[in-house]
Image (cartoon, rainbow, N blue to C red; front, side, top):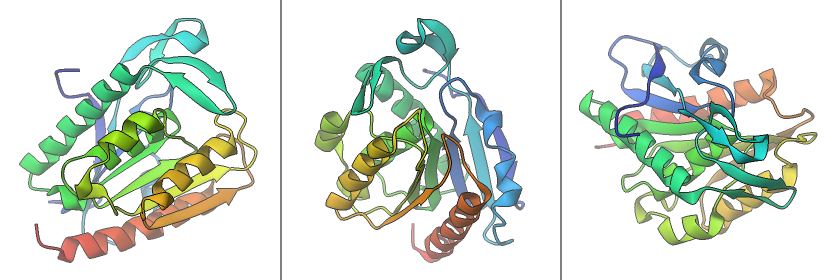
Length: 230
């Protein structure tokens, strides 16, 4: 992952002042959530650049070694957690940091950038966001979990010690059980993060009510970040 990840980009207005880097789930790609942008119904200002990166294709152990887009290998699945490749998690976090740096170079400071992700992508949003050395505008974690909580606890950055989090989960999720989402929520709440938490009567997916809530949360975060000093 030494080169920048390929990505789909969408800008809500020319010369955007803020950015969202949104990671897809296991086996998907950056096109998965690109159609969500208009449904967020963000205000015209500040303009936002959405970046939807594509994860590299790697063999995934829990899926019989099948090669698919993935942010890291998962060795095993169970209701109480995931046994994941921590080196792969770190590599993906570094790839996301490179995208953050590119946004910085394009004029968007880190405090106006949100990391977002669904499922395995949300696991990277949590891990990269909480350990990033510069303060982010927020973290959006959808139907997800923290893949290596002990490792992350040792790497949490003071710069993002109180970064706001939007987290949501389906009550009928049979891919990432609700209890894993609750454990991740508890992890950030215990560290004094302002957490907006919601559950929805759905499986491993998103719904229109959830998307509307994300849009309102992002609008509030960016309104505040746009007036903050770099």
